[in-house]
Length: 190
Length: 159
Image 1 (tube, rainbow over the protein chains, first blue to last red):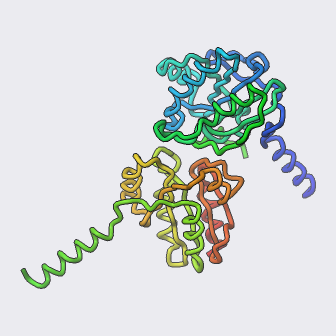
Image 2: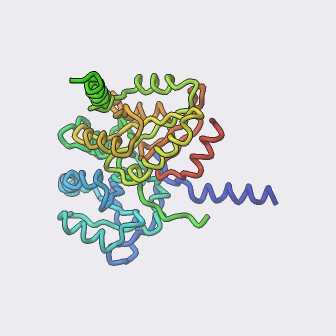
Image 3: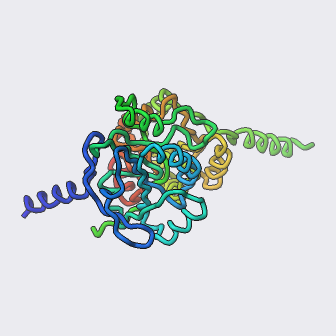
């Protein structure tokens, strides 16, 4: 019985653990638009894709609203696809839609109900970003830049990563520490 | 002026001067020194920020824990991860919550290296608590909203 329990625990850890890691390929997953319609990631991705976990309440995520708009406006015309995801259990779809409208986001924000996708990416905070190449492999994971205060930014981490991936170059810094508010996950049943 | 009044005024001035007006900047070397300075006591390092709601909610509970276990050798050190503009607010929050002072503010030369040097498994998310035993060894890390019962159990095991 003890062995069975141990095996069950080990399986649960694997199932709940991070699935997509730096260098590994991201499999397809389902998220919802703010109207509640299921959308497959495979229909949103491109040769270069940015997956960003964001929030409506988090002051750090909100400090990046204008920077995220600039990123989208600069890189979407170059063919980069953006998938903005809200995985916070305490921020419903209607609030996500209202927040996007209030801030004039030129991009869609999707809901990750039950933080299933955030778990698969191992995303912990908002904002937190992942850059995928044409094969779907994660080439960059981390923060957008190196300071919440735009005046103190010295390194454009996400832009540097995008430029490198688009040019087929090796990234100097493929992983950085994302900083921001913890993603508010649903409580586990245990 | 009577001698008693003079003494009272001097004590008030000394108390005012003893109240820190800044948080102490902490870089990689500073953190190592701070952790090592607690040998003989159990140290709980709390990385927090004023913008972090769970951090703010946890602070009174951590202060209460420190108060309850201080005599048994616990010390609580708070390290703010705020931007310079928020430092005053961070210090005010610590004072309002009667957190042990001085408080510290994270100012590493390289944030990635700093975080990795404390715990490579730490993503940088807040709150983050690190428990050091009486030998100055890190024995437990807590990331995200803290399970206070689990934290207290860890404290009791090390005190």
